[in-house]
Image 1 (tube, rainbow, N blue to C red):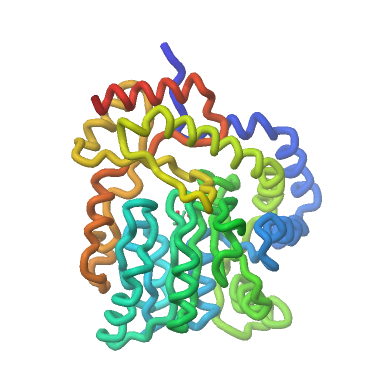
Image 2: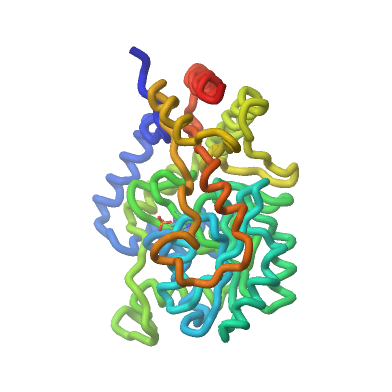
Length: 375
Ligand SMILES: *Cc1c(COP(=O)(O)O)cnc(C)c1O
């Protein structure tokens, strides 16, 4: 009987840094500052330094990170925020939670990311509904940065805030710059399965904007002013636990090495599968962190392929089976014409096991199973 294959092998990472993690956790248990302890600020500095952004503000999770930015910018009722249709729910959920209206636009099949060419239509659509277009949230799906040159140009020309939802791409780069510096504001998530994950929920916002940082730090602690019992605005309770900050510092130490290991895994997948299925491509100016390795199976019965892989002991996942404009909760929101690519991708995509500790023998087993399943 062969070993079951992990979709994401967090246990292998844990074995690698178990001593460091145990020590870091013990230190927090000893000092006892579970909320807003010293590890939180230390981690924020380390995170900002890693990406090259001036500031990092940690918070409870990646969804809150988006919501906090929208709240800080006063985006709400009567405002429109443009989001890609093919993404995780949280991108649009944060917009709706603050009372603004998400406007869905299509993505590009080549990189799964928002099609900057459709932003003009989305702005017109917002105005035709009497909404004030305020922001664009670009998602770096599966770990690859969106087209920030085009996005920044459009947003500057139209006076829109560009927010990078980098929940899947933190650690990646675009034109020699790291994710965290590609838009005026970047949000990320430390959900355990993300490329940089903690042992629970966590998130952060990266920016060079000191004024925004001050507001975010107030909002995440109930809108505090000079202290916790001085409330100057309506905020939320969204802090990164001290324990998670301590864990994340250990993981950040090996993150660059893990990103390099992910490149090797992705290159081997492309070699083995490139002429059997549609494998993801990365422009020469970008480095993906491969949050997911997502192949496309146009014309094939995707669910049958997934079932065959399962029978062969290979776990897979479908990100995402339904574009947002087809979700019950989001159906009523405006969408630009032609979300055809999102619809098509939702039927074609299949994500394979991907993590930095995927050894060659296991990867060969996966590739052979894929080749057989699509034959
Ligand atoms: C995971 C994810 C989020 C939300 O992060 P949480 O920490 O789970 O709240 C937001 N956007 C995208 C694209 C994600 O993949």
